[in-house]
Amino acid sequence: MFHLLSAHFGPQDWWPAETELEVIIGAVLTQNTNWTNVEKAISNLKDKGLVSLDRLVSLPTGDLAKEIRPAGYYNIKAKRLKNLIHFIADRYDGDLAGFLNEETERLREGLLSVNGVGPETADSIILYAANRPLFVVDTYTHRILNRHGMAGEETSYHELQEIFMDHLPEDAPFFNEFHALLVQTGKNYCRKAPLCSDCPLSRWESQDNINHLKG
DNA sequence: CACCAGGCAAGTA
DNA sequence: TACTTGCATGGT
Image 1 (cartoon, rainbow, N blue to C red):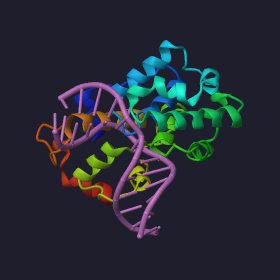
Image 2 (image 1 turned 180 degrees about the horizontal axis):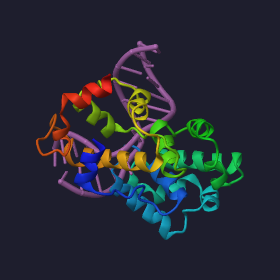
Image 3 (image 1 turned 60 degrees about the horizontal axis):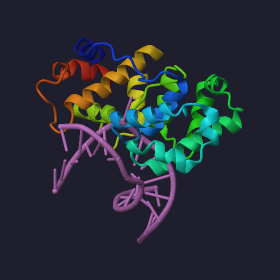
């Protein structure tokens, strides 16, 4: 599946950000939101020099909300971003690199303890900011596996994550690219129809592949 | 006009 | 515990 998508789309060059902090900000802002809207919000922050831990700590939540307005849910996201920023500022004395250097389990535990950070946001930060081999699951991932008979509607986040991590080499650059390719696929081909004939994965519909994974 | 987007938490019974 | 609802802008 990876090779089909990679050959079809080419390198994805994720995460689209310049710094680790920008990855963290984007991970929160993109919750249930189109990335192009997130880009506008991040552009606002950059224009005002606000992509900085110190600046974000001192920035009132209401002012932050105003800047990230294009990303939607701006009031709740301003709170969530502040929660996460203050967690790093308080618990790690503002040492972002030190925080990202934590052991993966501890890192995930810390991220999930923040109100507004769920499994996908946490794992996105762990994979794309800390470069750890943890597979990120999102609605596209779920939908694609469902379409290909490898997951049900109710399959949990953790179960979906295990489908990848139990059968693939735990390599951060590989997980990085695979997840990005699944998102690209979901955006272009998996909107409504069960399985479009021009989907790059249509050729993957081979029982051999499915049985191998189920076995 | 309706529908969707790289979730998550709070409210209800 | 199991459902449901709120959050909100911008593109198609």
